Image (tube, rainbow, N blue to C red; front, side):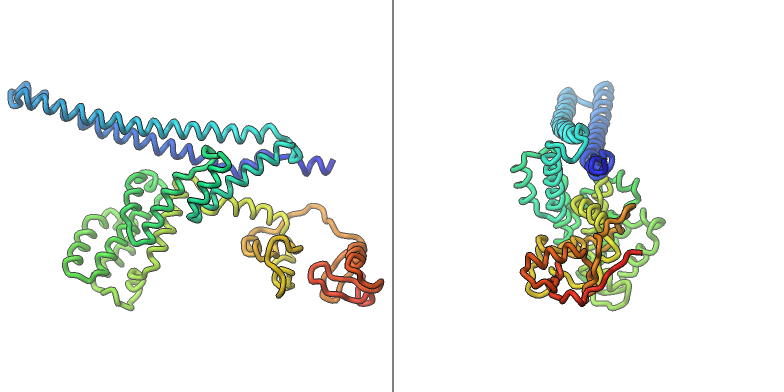
Length: 407
């Protein structure tokens, strides 16, 4: 009965990790709809005004028949352009609905399984692992590897390559010292950024100002003043301290050592801008800040972590002459590969303790069951009065072992 309960699938817990799978297409649908509505209203307003102007000019006799025909051609061209734009938005909407259907079908497969021993569960969980790997690769800029994995597994509708590729392109442009693409992205998502009180656009405008000041040219300084007059007033009430610092840059050259002005000229600001953009992008689309693979690993590591982990005892993966692969016989929490990731996860909560019987304490303060020590010593070819540490490989005489009692 206990094994049956342990192997039972908790569907709600599984779906916690898969929330972005459905939420991202939904957020992209909202964005697509807002963009389509914006261009429709903009072009409709233009045609409406142009039509009223043409009709009034024709009735007043101020417009010749040739002018009327010319205006009609302009309006027709504008509507044809709108049709092309709406066709693009319609194709994007169709693609997103196809993705949603595929993802719902993928999650529905899980709802039909009830235990991890179901023959279909291994295939489904392997597919989910592939999705997590693609998410990890995309977040770290390995776009070509992610695309190759998606093509090999045939799961184009279960991942969002285009979204992450666009994000990595803008991030790369920021690291390269350009804010143009990031500002264009802010303009496209102005309403969403305003609703979540993001300061990304303000930071980008400040960086533009700083780069103008960095040239230390009188003409560029005039451009910087014009830039500040144009873009900083809307932020005076929201970020008064930062606006004051930007104004103070007018009195400090790029080689200044006075803070906080020296920090403004630091090249590290570009890295912070890139990180701020990624955070705003993920928050806007409802994506977690960390790769889903890390979240899944952290959940598993938390189930294994005990207060003894991250201790000072050496492990086989940290001793000289031993490899640092996951195949070493050490606790996963203490392994070189997962130690740092597991450092901040909570300890496991076990309602029942599972301890070997007849415990013995070795001189190196490690504790093992007597039966396991005897079995390992036999396999190692040791004498009848010797035991060997299962992890470190140290050999001790049996009379040096102490009995351990659990109280």
